[in-house]
Amino acid sequence: MRRQRIDIVTLGCSKNLVDSERLMRQLEMAGYDVTHDAERPEGEIAVVNTCGFIGDAKEESINMILEFAQRKEEGELKKLFVMGCLSERYLKELAVEIPQVDKFYGKFDWKELLRDLGKSYHQELYNERTLTTPRHYAYLKISEGCDRHCSYCAIPIMTGHHVSRPMEEIVDEARYLVSRGVKEFQVIAQELTYYGVDLYQRQALPELIERVADVEGVEWIRLHYAYPAHFPADLLRVTRERDNVCKYLDIALQHISDKMLKLMRRHVTKEETYQLIGQLRREVPGIHLRTTLMVGHPGETEEDFEELKEFVREARFERMGAFAYSEEEGTFAAREYEDSIPKEVKQARLDELMDIQQGISADIASEKIGKRLKVIVDRREGDYYIGRTEFDSPEVDPEVLISAGDGELRIGDFYLVEVTDADDFDLYAKPCLE
Image (cartoon, rainbow, N blue to C red):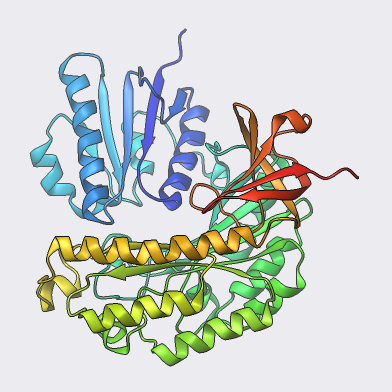
């Protein structure tokens, strides 16, 4: 008997990806052939895992649903299901607008999908996933939800209160993934540094990271989405002392002007931000900081923007992204502020900020020429093997290009390389002869 095929498409962040991977494992156990982000979806059933973070992401999710809805109308698809953040937020409205969808599920009730297919949820597989990433790295989600209420952010509306996973469960998952070949973990959450407050009445992230670092076979741990207020200082000791905790921290700062930080409801000041950056660099020598900044939030004047530019020049972030404010329904900013900054002004500020960062990134990359760095090889593209250092997270950070003519390398293995050249973002290197 031919196994039914299900196509799963994941949109948005790595936290959504983990949910898709868990669902895939359950569906495979139920007897389905499952593909993920297939170039040509051809299954009888499709599942779209949506993102609802900002306008562009919502539009992408809706367009993807409509593509599959058309396939269903043309008789190429029997069942269409939708899950994830956009579905969580607009479930009733979407059900009316796109009736071709058989059922919409919220972010946390996707297990019902199995029941609706006439299959059982296997609780004993709760920690197992079918990895969609290269087998040597995986995302490790340690909590759901967020108790911060930044003015512009709709995430708490979709995900609810912060809920930490028990440490033992996370460590068990890390052991399972290592047994499947994973060497590198990107630790993720809506807000890492709040981890444990609900379960243990304390910020338990440092202890959790030490326990994951103790798992035999864990080579690299990288931390994503920290929050600057009430930062757990002991995490710096862990990062400094543990060889397999990467000297890397993703900490979204959003702005630097005290006025803007207050309007954004960030609960941190300019002085505290500078002090934290100084502490991070002082206590973890060589750390690479990734941050995200926002331009065009209601109330941002030219003076505020000049202050932000000066901050970028002074802080010299090794990795930086930025985005323009877009009003999100239901947020504090949408209720209380007028989105009065013209779109073209927002875009001009964004371009200017990223131009400054491009020069900084080029300088930082060029400083690595002649240095020896440990890299993990992700893939081969044409004449190059593509790798990353401990300072580079998959998908979002620079890469290291190693000429395939310098010898054969194995995907997923670590190598010592010497950096020979650099452009604005990426490095070029050759393997070191031992």
